[in-house]
Image 1 (cartoon, one colour):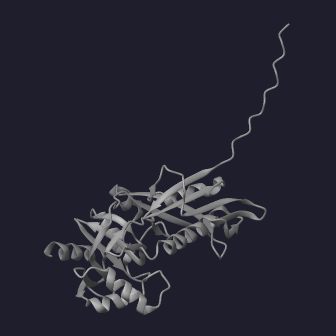
Image 2 (cartoon, rainbow, N blue to C red):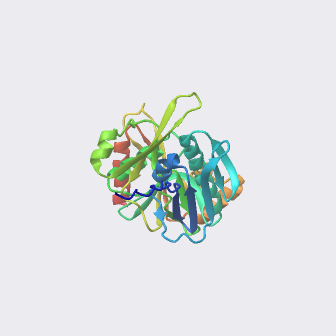
Image 3 (cartoon, rainbow, N blue to C red):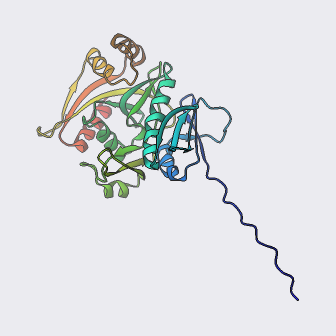
Length: 300
């Protein structure tokens, strides 16, 4: 008579855990997430930063975990947000991650609302308000072989160098007016990620994240500062040289740190090299605008 089989023990699935440590300038930022629904978005948002194998010690630590009211987000134990939807919490994390990191980097770095790329040894910073064409000109540069540093947070140190802060290029729609999604894929220069959440109007929103493949590693000196302005009403690209004093006044408005205006100007004056050139580029077509940038740099 065959012996009866012992009862099979039901193995419990180990709890989900995503743990990432990032090196950003001199900071180490750790992210612990025990919510699997948030993991794809967190990984997409942090994919371009330098990941550290060393998990000991952190200057900032973000946690995402279940709570009685939903999914809770905290930084260094301080509550930030609770949401019912994973995508909503990822969006809150994105905002908190940038703001807390930028605040902690000061005063070693000031953060400019600007894109930065490096092309053939030239550090190019493109500063402007939303809609001016900053990210568009940055994307055009990347399609022509530039290395990516940032499209939103350009970290300027006290010696005039920009340190990488490579957040993904971010579009709210599938296609950009100047760059089709297919062309971006066909270039072979970008990977893609995304996360989705429900907007304030109750409609679904997908945040499309482009991951440039050519990243700047070492800090680059700011050789050229561009103040862009998209203008569909003009026929051709216009390039205007800008006085240093005027450029610094405009750039002071694009700093993320809430400092008095005089202090912002003083910081910029001391940090930006005397050799930096300042130009305003007004353009109806971003591809033609980048060609003008290449000409400026090759002619010296």
